[in-house]
Length: 263
Ligand code: HEC
Ligand code: HEC
Image (cartoon, rainbow, N blue to C red):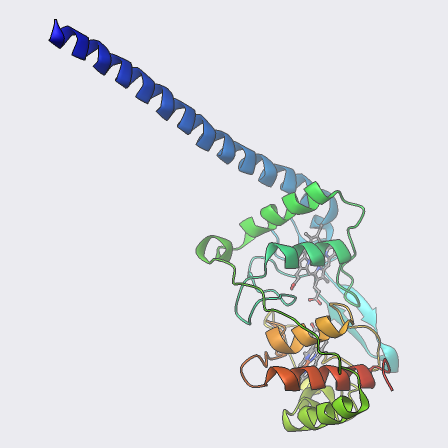
């Protein structure tokens, strides 16, 4: 009798276990399906909005393979839509060498990249913008192999833009040899500027501070992030280790001055 009751209890336990495992597997399965669905949706969004420049394989060889841009001073040069298979990104809030965060990519896709030909996609729904990010991550193995790093914290001091900070920033600009690429007056014509190439082998010009907005936007915080994180792939270094935080903010003041945004 006792043995029989035990057997029934055993069977009941087995049935509940099988049931639980079943529920668990369905949950995992549907999470996986949902993700695959998002990537699939992202592919549709990509083909609609991005393929024309970045190419079907994400290698930057879309129909608009080459975008011509005319600068002040009569210079014309070519910019290539990014080859996303390399997995190197310029506009990050993370340290040099790191992958960008999802917020970084969302900002790039939403606002576009000024002065580069990459348009804003404010007209695309937020859901579709998030889906397209998951799809472009499938182009580079880095997204499978690495975890994104934490974003740097950016806290602008009150004195940024003050006359004394501009003066200190001017000294940092000289000492750190920014002028080698950006020129003594910040016009992008330093001694090294003629020979700069990016990681994709294309000619690249150092930013001309008198030519208008920064690619990532010209708020003091955006300028700070340029020095702190570097623009990976462009030769524009990160000064996270070589400059104290205070000096980076003085440099922001001097940059604002060169751009004519403060006195
Ligand atoms: C008209 C052409 C064009 C279209 C359309 C376009 N891009 Fe771009 N994109 C560019 C160019 C050019 C660059 C390189 C800009 C640079 O390096 O200065 C770029 C760069 C990027 C980058 C790299 C940003 C970084 O931090 O380095 C990402 C990510 C990107 N595009 C995603 C997209 C997505 C997603 C879409 C579609 C929703 C899209 N782009 C549509 C031209 C385009
Ligand atoms: C080895 C050359 C080199 C040096 C040194 C260098 N830069 Fe750059 N910098 C570049 C290049 C190239 C770009 C343009 C990248 C692009 O257009 O994608 C750039 C872009 C920038 C931008 C514009 C970013 C944007 O969003 O458009 C700022 C601001 C800047 N540099 C400031 C500085 C300052 C300040 C220093 C010194 C602390 C410095 N750079 C040192 C090469 C250099």
